Image (cartoon, rainbow, N blue to C red; front, side, top):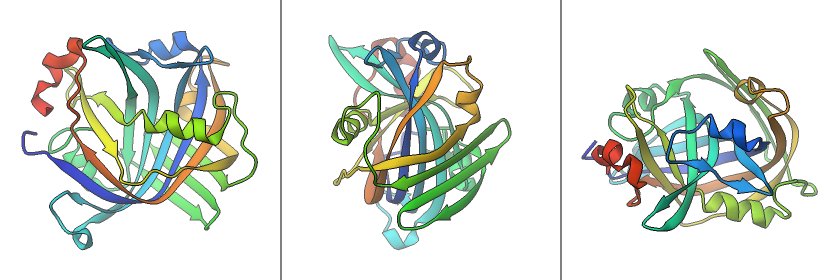
Length: 245
């Protein structure tokens, strides 16, 4: 992956569904040296459901990109680097509607992807997204706006700040052997509150009873995103990740 530089895309819709998770359970889902990032004594995990268009390498013009739906199950994590505590997310698994990310993920760019089938029923203010794949099913129905309600984040601005500082995503490398990083950035960052009408994820449903509790949702729309390789590497995984940096 030495030729990887950046990926660019336009985000049509990004749903960030957050769960409050038991820290001991969360720790079993992430490798060392990561630890769960705690908010009010709880770990924070979630489902990121993102619809992209004009996906392309950074040097290709937008009109040549492709469109894809994606889902990531993620856990907010911390790690220590040069005496400084860093934050990001550990991505347990990724799914995509497009064959190209499935073939190229973990090869041409970091992030192994699994193929999935998506069903969309969306309007300007309501987003119903269903994903089905072998062993994993997600069904989310979110309405834009409404009063903010969360036991993790007092305000939608707090939720926005939390997600904005967790832009480095770590995920298992193809064929095992450590993890690899991918950093998401944007020239714009705008988050709107969402009201969860319903949300089901087989990943969270399969955790011990009561270990994961649905908390809140935020929505991002019509924003340019960039993915690249970050310069920060936890010391204990540096040797495993060096090939992608």
